[in-house]
Length: 214
Image 1 (cartoon, rainbow, N blue to C red):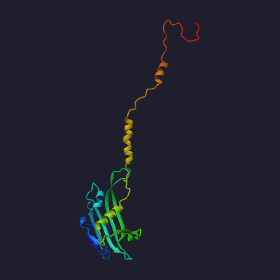
Image 2 (image 1 turned 120 degrees about the horizontal axis):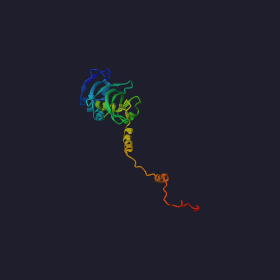
Image 3 (image 1 turned 90 degrees about the vertical axis):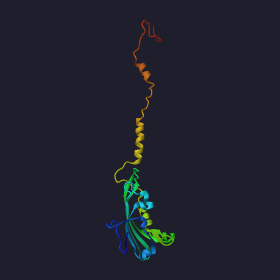
Image 4 (image 1 turned 45 degrees about the vertical axis):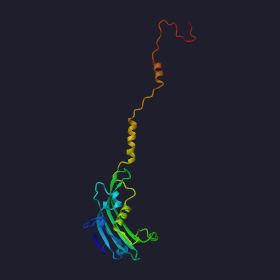
């Protein structure tokens, strides 16, 4: 981890070092803001417990790059600028298949001691409640920022096959494959009798019709 006591590092710098998430320190917020402490580093996404479900299956070594700077504003509020960059795996909302999603997040954090202070934080800032001793853990801040940056709905850029259409197709195929039994036509036999040639019995004297004179 690199530490800078004044500069604001930029995500994506070439000299970023990969480190263990367990080495990320817990900081006393008041002291960190008073001294303008800044951190820049890279950790494995899989080493952050709440982000394990989002680790790409085909890239388990995916890293999370971050920049974090603590400072105070003119009103003496305790703030931190956090920037993260990584790649996560989520399910496509259209085809319901896993997809890799490049992700960046950036927030201005304001540290507070209780819920009443959190309610007074402006919309442009994200309130962060410090622990009973006034401290925060960098790994917790990274997890929160990534989780907030993950979109509620994500879809492949290409036009993937909607899952509901894939489910409907087999049912249609089965329906077409089933041969429907032919129903007997009640008029078929009558039509055969109607079209059949009439036969006469030899020696018959008449047709047997009523009203015919002999």
